[in-house]
Image (cartoon, rainbow, N blue to C red; front, side, top):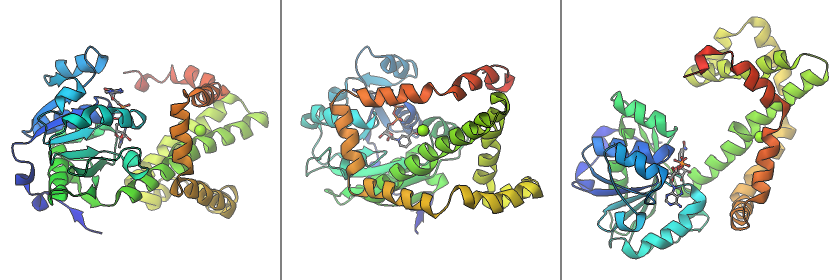
Length: 328
Ligand code: NAD
Ligand code: MG
């Protein structure tokens, strides 16, 4: 796989560019500030009077309503939540300059055809592999979070060069820019968050916690074992893979890991992971989520409430209140 670095960047591709960043949340704020500090002419496109418009103005940015912000922009970064992007695109499209670049940080709306951009636009993806606050913090330390890059539509013949110059403005070329496609980024991102990161990890924690509590152990002890200490292991994996984790855990823990882990997560789990991946690949998941948003999000809110009503939440809140290092 080709990984692009700073020396591969053609800064002329976005020279003197005016960049409209639409949305000022996790990614939007980090992108806008990093690009500004990299010398780009940045305008934030936000709902007038909204809470993030105040924050962007306080950060010293020029703020306009989205439809006005894009008017003279050479590149427009769509950094609102994914479900609101189709309606937002419809509102800004008439004002987009011919041959401008439309940039996404996640491929959902392009890959699942929720947005069909005008044919004269370049359509690109720069997806930092980290949350916005890390993208900002790393940049401030002259470092950068690695990014994925992809091109869905190359109307001008310079889409890739422009996207790479944008990633460079974020600091991403310092961390490395990895080439992918909208399909690969979207499908792997959804699968990862569903099966492993958010869905998989939380269900593993909850089932472990329930197993101990139902067997008569104290909820507080179960919380420490199954949720709190997960961070220790994840940090070791993040820093040095399986090898580093094995170096830092006891031999007893290693032996338990090697003999019991595969009993909990086995090939039947993998079969179900394949089924989850299939829902992502054939559009079943995307259709469900789009319909959920269109029909008022009642199921989504109910399931969220149910998740937060799990007893581990009350136990956790009580214990975390005593962890002085968590109170900032
Ligand atoms: P977010 O929820 O943190 O922020 C969204 C912001 O959009 C809000 O703060 C607000 O400023 C604005 N907004 C909301 N509704 C709006 C509307 N109707 N009109 C105009 N502005 C509106 O979003 P995020 O997590 O930064 O995600 C932005 C994009 O980045 C998404 O495509 C997401 O998939 C992608 N992404 C996020 C992360 C992450 O770590 N959060 C990582 C990679 C990619
Ligand atoms: Mg869950």
